[in-house]
Length: 369
Image (cartoon, rainbow, N blue to C red; front, side):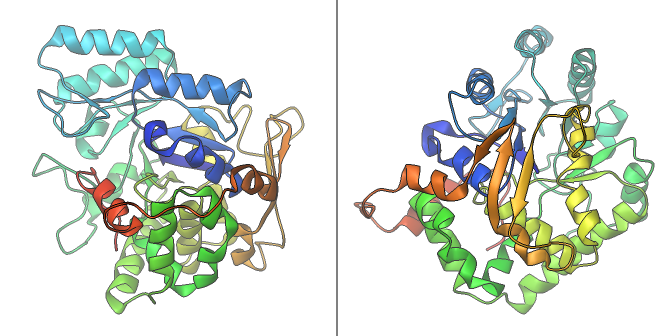
């Protein structure tokens, strides 16, 4: 299984992000923005077995305009600066090139050309503008924008035909990041009692999961979820290629991919169609389908084994028995045991929920409460 949109924050999460994702059956994660040197270091460490977790597809800093709002962004005021950034990304053989919301159309086009010379995709938050620039996908359906004509959905949440047509021929793809699916924790509170939450997640994420699990989805949350899933259903029915991502750690890693899959399945996607969004579609989108995405002789031995049959009981998909990643067996209980410690002391000021709220401040995209 793929998580097609993540951001590794090893300075904050340490090894927990990767361990949690692997324990939930995720074998590959795509970084869509990070410190380039750190992303490449993590990619090599995971590939070489020095770290434990899913394989990582690396991306450098968000290529932005004259200023940028986030630590993972890289500001550019000159054409020469853009050239140096792209040369650096090429030298370190990135797996994705991403531009951000203040980058001009010219810079977006240069980034797309640089990515295609490497044989990897390029993308941004901008739909029609990104496609016109030669990019391959948007990393959300709707997220942070700086152009009044760049929005894919209206303030009321409507999706119009002009946006559908941008994706319908399959030449331009979408990474779905359904933040609205977080409300499904309240529909299955037992998810918060999982040792992968209590032990592997950092205490602020565990606190957020517990808080959401104690609250039944409201009518407004259910309506927002149904609207978002309806957009994805409409787009894929028209022919769009749609992979599933989480934007973790904006939402808790690992578990959030399962919430997204449940949301798709509960709102009209068959079990197979939902699973394709986290297996075959991202493998093709990121150009690794020769080795990954399906179970076939000669491909890399990645396999997620669950207790049950998700084609008759989709909820069992979260019950991971073991994960085979690059031929190496990992059992969730062993990963949990490797991180078991004494009780975590509370922060000196406030609660772990306060810490979670602080970490969300300034995020480029905000998950639904």
